[in-house]
Amino acid sequence: MNFGQTIREYETEILDYLAELIAIPSVSHPDQPLPGKPFGEESARALESILSKGAELGFSVKNVGNYAGHVSYDCGEGDYAAVLSHVDVVPVGSGWETDPFTLTEKDGLLYGRGVLDDKGSAVISLFCLKALKDHGVLGNRSIRCIFGAGEEVGMCDLEHYFAEEPLPSLSFTPDGEYGICNREKGILHFTLETEQDFGVIHSFTGGYVANAVPDTAQAVVDCTQEQCERLQQAAESSGEDYTLTYDAQLGRATVTVNGRAAHGSKPEDGHNAIMVLLMLLSRVFVPEQLGKLPSFLAAYIKMETDGTSLSIAQSDAYSGSVTLNVGILSIEEGAAKATIDIRYPVTASGEAIIETICQQAKEHGVFYQTMENLAPLYAEAESPLVTVLSEAYESVTGEKATLYATGGGSYARCIPGHCVAFGPLFPGEPNRRLHESGEHMDKELFFRHAEICLEAMYRMIQIDL
Image (cartoon, rainbow, N blue to C red; front, side):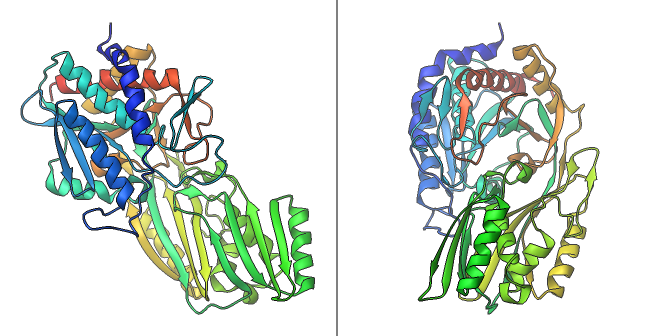
């Protein structure tokens, strides 16, 4: 039998602890740091929880400033292998049918915020360490489970971790799909801002994070009764899901639209509520009335997800097309700010894309600011890492592991050439609502992933480099 099947001995323990971890609402808040807790209270609590569980299971642990930490099985000398996962989660959003912070099993599915991204895989990797230790497995190197507390907000968590700790010789992050993701698009996060840009929009709110398609947006608009009626006609004819109220005394309309959430790397799978609302407003109000930033977004982004009107659309055979998502838009007291997520092909230049956007923004009085620009990732198909993971996957499933590209960003970027995304989703699975309401995993496939994870960890510590 494959050693990976050993993880089945720990199914009950895995689910029990997963329920504990999911109960911690560990949305990371880098904008609300606390002393010694750079991403806020709850992400630090989740990190401490899993490290404490590792210590309870008899392993050595280390917390690096509540940015990240590790649980280590010292089963070999010299270098080490690693599995990298994270315990922070994206905001809950709306539309849940179960409590997002209660692990709920229903019809063979496991529901809860983080069960897929990435607490489920984090807990599995921890118990894979336990399986290795309980069965006395030794190897050519030690192995760590590294847990981050700020992956969803830019991955600076591992920058801090690896400033103190050496890089692993080979590693994977179970934060993607099977087979093996050896190509990741570049990721560009940036803001567009204007100040004292007074127009008819009194306030606008939409979105929580750059890397999720917003499922709701609301605007309060100064307008006449006639303009309000035109806005309602535009909304009716669009077929969008909306509500509209008018305060005649204040001369203000409040418009709310509902879209469909999706991961920011696949904006085409969602329906961006921010852009839906801006496009509705642009059918009634001219650019001078909307303001510089709203009119720029409506003219140069529209409902497109490939950057065509922004003049940045491109693709390659290795990783596909540019994707673009307006993740956040806030307008208040004349100040407007949008946060945008772009994923670009592995052969594209992030600097060229930035230059194009900057030029167009400048021409329209909009200020551009880069938040992060993560270079694309490529790992050789013949590398020892890809080879050993391929063998582990085939050993458990009986099928060859395909190599693929993604627009998603993973911890693999923190260890170029020595880390890839590997699981937990299997080919052909339906939408498990990653970054959406109702996030879930199939329970049986969850434990099939656990088998592959353990088999891969077992082989990584044995391989000669």
